[in-house]
Structure formats: C-alpha cells, structure tokens
Image (cartoon, rainbow, N blue to C red; front, side):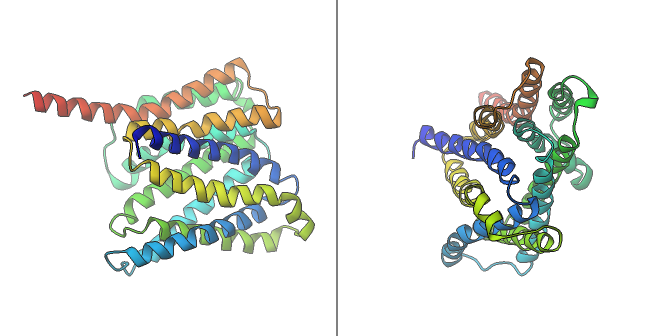
Length: 300
C-alpha cells in the first residue's frame, strides 16, 4: 500500500466517524440513549469477534494474565465517554459535539502530567488556551451560549482522554488490539443494555425506527473505521495520520450542515478553526521538533 492510499484510508475513517455524529443524534428521535449505546456496541462486539479470534490464532505470545482485567478498565472509560457524548447530543448540535469531543487531544497530555508525572511538550499549554478560546467562540462568544450538552461533551472528551491514557498503559506488550477492541465494546454493550433495561422503555418498533443508525454506528463507526485506522497508520507518518484522523471534526460539521440543516455562525467557524488548530499543534509540533533535532544531530 502506498502512503497516498494509506492517507485515504485515514480520511475515510474520519468521514465515517464524522457522519457517525449524525447517526447518534437522529437515532434518539426513536430510541433512548442507553439503548442506542447498548445495541450499537453489541453489534460492534460481533464485528470485532472474528478479528479477535484470528488475532489469537496468529499471536506469537500468550495473553498476560491481567490483560482482560485491564481491557475491562479501558471499556469502563469508553462507556463513560459514550454515555456523556450521547446525552450531550440531546441538547447540543452535531457540529459542537464533533469539535468538543476532539478536545481529548489536549486533555491526554494534561492527564499524563497529573497521573503519570511525565512532562509534556511545551506546545501543550498554548494549545490548551487556544482550544479553550475556540470553545468560547463556538458557543457564540458568550459563556451563556454553552449548553448543558456542550458541557457533557467536554466531559466526554475527558473520558476519551482517560481511555487513551489507559490504552497507552495497558495495551503495550499484549499485541492484541482486536481483543482489546472486542472487550471494551462488550463492556459498553453489557452496561448499556443493563442500565437501559432499568431506565428506558424499549419496543421492537423503537428498534426498527432506529435500526439504520444503530447498524451504522455498530458496523461502520466501530468496525470498519477502526480497521481502516489500524491499516492506514501502518503505512503513513504520525503527522499525516493526525491530520487525516482529525478530519472527523470537520466531517461532523459538514454532515451536520448537509443532513440536519444546522447553521454555523461566522464566529462559530472561527472557534472551530481555533480548536482544530490546537488539536493539530499538539500532534504536529512535537513530531516536527523531533525530526529537526535528528537532522541537526545527523549533520553534526
């Protein structure tokens, strides 16, 4: 696979995830958020299962004894992110949800400092300020413009950051990304269905009305897009991967405008641009600095 083909795979992942925000939003016209989460991840578990079985047959080393427990912790963080994002979509736009979810790119290094005592690159702090100002503009340039859904989505981004940090801690050394995916999907499916059974009504008619969105989120957002991401990142550089995967937020805004008739104000567009710039700065500046340092060392 060429680098251009790999980048197209990553761009395809971003488009799938961006459209997924529309599916998540419109599904709740027919079904409750918890049932949507439970059923979506049940389908995702089925999609990931054969890949995990193939992976297990090809594994060179046995699975560590504590791996499943650690994967469950990752699933709990994923469930927290899924719940806050889904409830946030009840009172925020697809555009806002897409961009605010992307703040995990800024939160991950901050959590690394607090919990792992690792000093981040200097770009983290200006990027955090830039993203915060972008949120302010995205809300309409007034703090009162932030809805409860926006705040829940920011909490969602924090959960995604925790999930990514746990993946960084626990996934190394297992060589089982598909098993990790299947396990965290299964945790979300079980918790979502149990809570939904206790808190939300359900009928076959509800499921039938939301079935296209459930299938899209389960098969494509959690299945196909994940596979494309894994395949694409094997053949391209980290900075290029960051740019193409960050397109998720742009596609969320695009599909929100095209499919849901959402409107973004001029100030909102500027806020989106600042948040996107912050996400890219966190990914690209450290990588470019490392590359330049290696060039200087090679020249010396």
